[in-house]
Image (cartoon, rainbow, N blue to C red; front, side):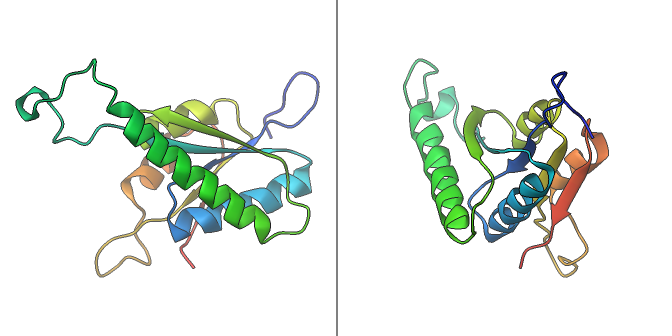
Length: 152
């Protein structure tokens, strides 16, 4: 397990996007943090949709990113509030919203984590055995152990 120099366990990082899968991941992460005496860092990532660009009248100096950041923060806060409300004495949670591709944001956060917890997001006929692209990337490249929780 990764630890700080003062022997306090590093946080359990949980990727949250508001989906039922991320709710399950947060629930599991909170239980694990409680067992290890750690905390949870719940993270939501956002980025401009690919259709945004100069040809669509977007100007980087415009405050449009605030809309996406606020939507991500709202989904994150709502998920944390809902899941914590379902548990008795859950671990402490800090929340963070970051701009960038979800996989990269989570990989950066995982550098200082004892564990990275994600929901699965499979697609297609074999959704039960496939991981979403973010989960797949993190499983293959994270600097800490990764737990992928299937959607309930």
